Image (cartoon, rainbow, N blue to C red; front, side, top):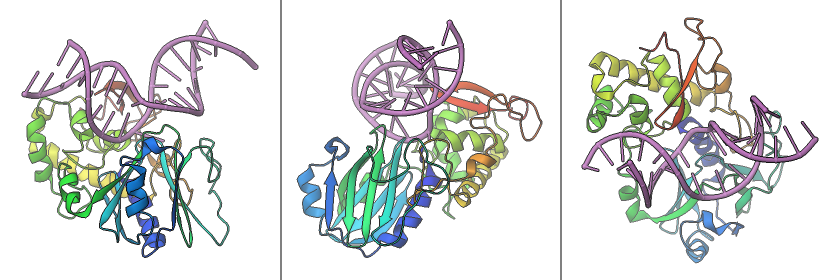
Length: 285
DNA sequence: CACTTGACCTGTCCGC
DNA sequence: TGCGGACAGGTCAAGT
């Protein structure tokens, strides 16, 4: 589920409620989701203050006063839902994927502060929490490609990173987090549509003008999705339990058989790089 | 070696 | 309505 726009939406919301708060307790119901021993979490997470909340690619990064960073990956179905102690908490719209209240049967980790609780739900249990010493964080993150919403992101960054993947299809290359950080299946398909590039095109075949178009398309799609607070078609909710509404504006993802918004021909779906891939055969060449 | 596939885990949806 | 199989947004180890 969560790609860059969803993770960034959660980051912004959590930063405003968690910054400066001290973690008073940790409840773990599924210790396999912790990538370090529980004792390490007890020692460096409980009692620590949250200094900042950042994001790199699809990772959420919580800076702790203990000298560690808490790294959280939501993978496919992870949710981080904040519930303040005071004030009523409610789900916006209708319940999604049976997840309508917290805690629930998929709540595997709970982090408590004097002001409320942060619930980590994950139906498929692919997500994880990991503690990284401050001094190791940059090493841990160094392999990731450029952040597409950074002002420093230019088409030449993309072109440079694509050099070592010339024989891949552009779809497969964009899913690779070392090429560009934060794209997943949805926004890769969306970006390729906006750039009018067929997902099957080999990286080596792309001309500079097409790479420029692709770069602009990625930024445009991600910004649009971020202002829509992400895409919810299944389990995604933000930290307030609310859905994102990019789904209503999407161009191709999940629209097989529906009409292309540009040429009115039906959207097609194929398997590429092992993933469902949606495109318009007429507009994307 | 570069690239593709399967595994992780659970739920949902579709066709018979 | 029940049941089996395909499929689901991410990532990486194992296999070709």
